[in-house]
Length: 566
Image (tube, one colour):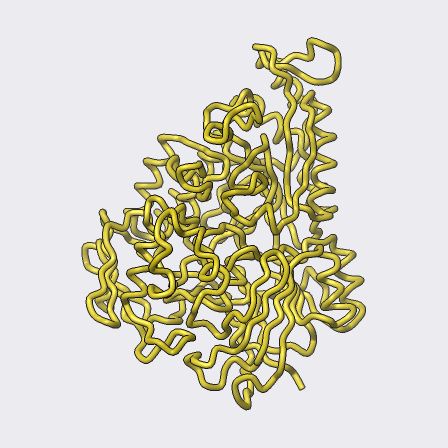
């Protein structure tokens, strides 16, 4: 199947194939490879996709999004709505009914107390929860009885499906994490590496940034699932090796995030052992602009905390930097049919994709003119401009280690040099860069650089929680143990007010319009430079059945349904 056809038909062919399981664990071992290795199994302490997805094999939310973006119950008995009485008429509460008979993998009952505890854990102001935007506006979470949980919001909330919905907001066991609240959260190594869960698998051994071994959960709610008795989850290496391991050598059954040139994917697929799967969700490769000062001369509580950046906050600068980039060329060399030019932070679903900006034409001359007019001159004749107060326009440009990203870095460095901005390039192991370790100087959250490039996405089709990552108070800092998803430290009063309006706005069309305006504010005001709307591309062995790529939740959301084709 050609990649173009694959992408166009991803939704149409996404029905889950029924699996004829003989019994739990009857199909032996399944081997998964994520070339960005998981560093933790607690998504509340990491914003890295690879950590969220690895954890999704073990811990689950009340509700997930399926392959077409619809909410489907997992641990909940049903989706609460106004019509069924689960959401109050005034839209200030949502009441969840838990499916009866659920057990944790240790055999203890799953109850509303665990759900309430999870909220308390993430909402603890000293905990640095990476997913705290899911709880925006929540004033209380109450366990009404063993199977009923009530969430109350400060204001009418037309979209109350932030907490406990999607792979980024799972439930953790109260008994296991009881001593891990607040500032103690990162210290609970055993719980963070091997959480007790309700999912299809349990952790046998976790080696950070290396390998995870898991076994079928003996207390999983479906007695016939999972079909696999064991999971080997290998991390590390690179996307090329991961793709080959599935499609050429057959050593692995599933390879995630094959960020590779189209011709490379085609060559691998020709070997006949595996099949690429792809689909477009909201995944965007972007350059984040540091709105604070990352100067190494500053202290640990000031670096990437003190505002402003010496020059990146000037619209003339970041607009010139954007204008200098040839996005169609980046798409061509990096992704082919698996990429599209985008000027937006949120390009999907289509209803929220703003048409305010155009950015498909590179214009070096216009970028130079913009900087010249704003007073940025090359006074020394060395090819590097200086700010009006004499600061050289030299930046540290970092990203994760990946062939496509290093190609992008090299091209963008050249284009920026043509407008008088000098770039030092740095790349870091994805396992470290996306790891979330508060003690590491190299995480994307800590952002000890001027600009950094990566991609991320969000669960579901409503971007409210994702857009909350642009709120002033969501910027990582020492006070939050460097957690938080406002990576650029963007802070705009209009944005914050408009997001508050979004949280109380009903109606899909009205919500979409506000979402587009929020997107426009953060792009127009220097939060980021969007580059490529990326299709998610992974691959599975031809002998692995039941795989349904999901661009709206954890990619391996239905691993319980995987089976070996005999």
